[in-house]
Image 1 (cartoon, helix red, strand yellow):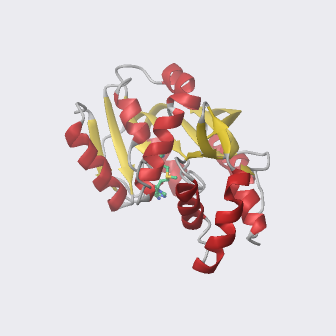
Image 2 (tube, rainbow, N blue to C red):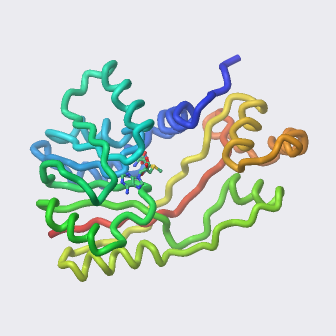
Image 3 (cartoon, helix red, strand yellow):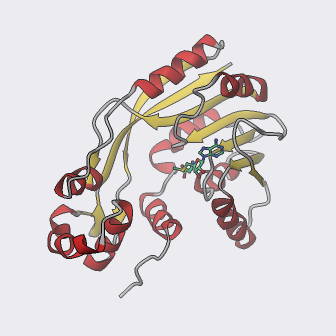
Amino acid sequence: MAEVPQTSTEYYKKATSFWNYPEVPYGPALRAMVLPTDVVADIGCGIGIVSRYLAGICQRVIAVDKNDNALKVLKEDLKQLDLENIEVVHAHWPDIQTDDWDVAVAFYHHRFASTSLEIETLLRKTRRCGIIVTQGIRPRSGFYEDLGREFGIIAQPESCVGSCYVRGRLEQAGFSVTCTEIFHDFGQPVDSQAEAVAYVMRQLRLKEHQRQRLDEIVLNYVEYVDGQMVLPIKRYNCMLQFYK
Ligand SMILES: C[S@@+](CC[C@H](N)C(=O)[O-])C[C@H]1O[C@@H](n2cnc3c(N)ncnc32)[C@H](O)[C@@H]1O
């Protein structure tokens, strides 16, 4: 039997590989926007899954994150990969000293571009356009919500105000912006009941005394996708595309 992942990075890599992220669902939008001659900034790159994808379709990627541990994973992975066009930058956006870029990408970077300084920096450093993915308008669904309710965890209030606010600020600054709702099926693949329990314990921060109850019910909350057991995470996100 496959071993249960031990770190968030291992779980995330398993999910991104299973769902072919970011090709699904953002590949068409990225490929339509990014030119082979472009420099692209991936702001809030995490372990660089999107940066690696971008490296295959543009000239150079500036991969930025404030989390040194995530960047260590990216740098370690880059040693094994034949990708020499990713520059890894440890910075707390918008405090950033890099070359300017043609295209800015910020996927699942919470509250990206909501302050004046961020908008000014984006305007100054972006030569052409960009793409931001954040929370959308429809209610979230999946194991976080369903099992969360089961264990009395109160869900965060839903709001699409964040994305509309960012859109407004970008437009005020002179960017032209389109906004598209985009569905992302991004559940966590797990190979056993034990792995499902381990993942949910970690994600919902359940206490040891709740483990037995979780073990009894967790299989009621999984679904199967192409024969793979998955803890569902389904999101209707907001994709903002902005142009100078
Ligand atoms: C949910 S992860 C998304 C990673 C990646 N964009 C992806 O789609 O796989 C969000 C990342 O944004 C980073 N982040 C959040 N605020 C930041 C900031 N002000 N400056 C740089 N990175 C930031 C976090 O450290 C985290 O790695």
